[in-house]
Structure formats: structure tokens, C-alpha cells
Image (tube, rainbow, N blue to C red; front, side):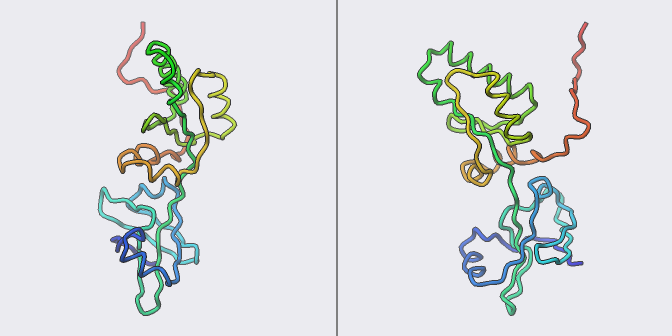
Length: 192
């Protein structure tokens, strides 16, 4: 088993893009959940067994070059599969008065929060990782039927480049977390 302790570079960098242009690439495909880990074992698409053991606090990014063999012109590159995203467009609220726009935004926040869906707001659009089936998420949105708000489903990759690193971590970091044991958690609030 090959052990990878440091990332060599990223295919988005011009030098690596040129080097990888005519190279044979074996992909280490990871879910966005696995990519958050600094230690993991996985097989590449080509069947090579690899262990990743990065420094604490480090994680893999899409396009990270994990191995390079100059003589063979071959590389192992990380490919992260991002979950699809529901994009909720709030720009229609601009046509409303302040009170009505705020009421719609609060209703949307309540609908999303009630489902425990993480969200990132950027340029008048709320991005929500698909933690449930598209039909389920559509049903929630259609049930609430919030005036001035439209939504669509987009690939995670198409949204990723619109976000800062922090926003991308908030949106994609853990969206595929196992749902087992899901429940309501109360932190220090006592009723009664």
C-alpha cells in the first residue's frame, strides 16, 4: 500500500496543468465527506491501494496531485465528488416592500432550519447541499410556497467556483455526513 503524506500540487496550477496535459492519470475518487479527513485508505480508479496520512488540520482538495512519476509520465490525482445543490434565488424579493421581503426571507429560514439543512447565502442566492432526495427538497419548498422565491437544482461543481474557501467548506464539508442517529439536540435550553 502506498502512503501519501503530502500533496505535491494541484492540477489547477498552471505548471501542474501543463505537466498533466499528456500524462496518464489515475484518479483517487473521494466523496466530499472523505475529502475532509486527513487520514484514509482507498483504492484509485486504476485499482491501486493508497493510504493518505496528511498533517492534522490538512485535507484534500479536488485536483490535488498525490503522486507523480516523471519517467512514466503518470500521476495520481484526487477527484472529489460534490453533492448537488439547491439554489434558492431571493432576487425576486427586491420587488417587494421591506416588510413583505423580510417576511418571505424569515419563512424561508424557518423552512430550511426546520429540516436542519445547512445553507450559504451569496449574492442573493441561498445554496443548500442536497442532503435529501430532490423530490423531498422540492416538496418542502413547494409546501412553503414562499412568495418571491424560486429554486433550482445545480451540480456542486457549478456552485463551487462561485464560493470562497470558507463558504465552500460550510456548504460541502460534511453534507454527506451519515444521517444515522439524527435527532433534535437541545443545548442548555430548559422548557417549563
